[in-house]
Length: 168
Image (spheres, rainbow, N blue to C red):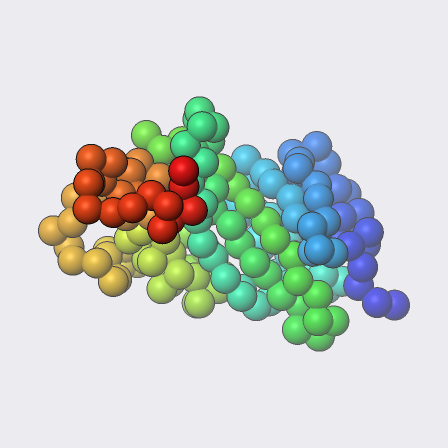
């Protein structure tokens, strides 16, 4: 029997019940959310369950939502069942003041560099990571460049024509 979004959701609901929320299927990809403290339990279940078998982490990234107080940073896991060719998206949210999320390095070796990159650009502290330090930016950098905390351009510039940028 083919692995469908309904089967995946059903198995997850059996195990975690109402602890999983935000169920969606944008473009057919099952997406859901949990509390950040459950991330390792959910990832381990998705990996170990013989019916689900999500043993490959395609991507791990972050998104900054500056207007969601207490949930400003989302860590997004993209997992793939290679046998059934099925992908899912799993999100956990964290407070920007204490952006701690447990590392997935012990489960997915690919998470090592992806978590370092996510730390480097968004400041997510992956608790338990074996070598959490900047990977692309200089160590001396005191900010996280992909957070939406800075204006994209100098608003006082006079050497540009707004019409050239599609603005009136």
